[in-house]
Length: 188
Image 1 (cartoon, rainbow, N blue to C red):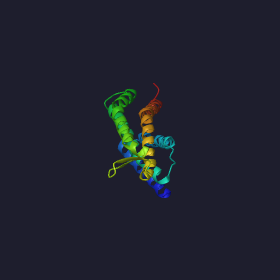
Image 2: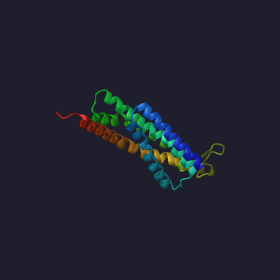
Image 3: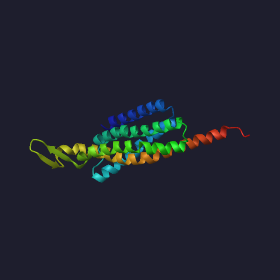
Image 4: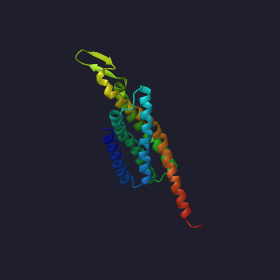
């Protein structure tokens, strides 16, 4: 199982990176998007620590793979808005600030609704419709608690970091480009 999931994760990462490079026409922006996956893995481990669950290869690995797609989507939205604002003539700093302001609500709403939707599985609630009982920690929830804890924890941490770190990384990339163009210009 571990070999398959590692191969699936590596394949998914590679395909996402290729698509992002083709979409943004920039290795740097594709790297910024993919860096969110690293942030989300830290959140996965934090979420599992908070819930007291071990990292299982199957359910934890599937959670990380699913989370990678969600988190990458948030960064794509931010970077696409940043590029659109720059094309409209805004300075990189103004574009980064407006991107954060314009996309704050959609990114947070997406992440919060996903995390809240997973909350019953994180807690381990099982609804029995036939006997009309609510059971906490039922045997049927044991598989899903680890998966949902991985996704919810990773999503919350990655969302916070995405809203702060992604615009900062975009500004670092713009400063690097500006320095490189200044060096190439002949001295007058």
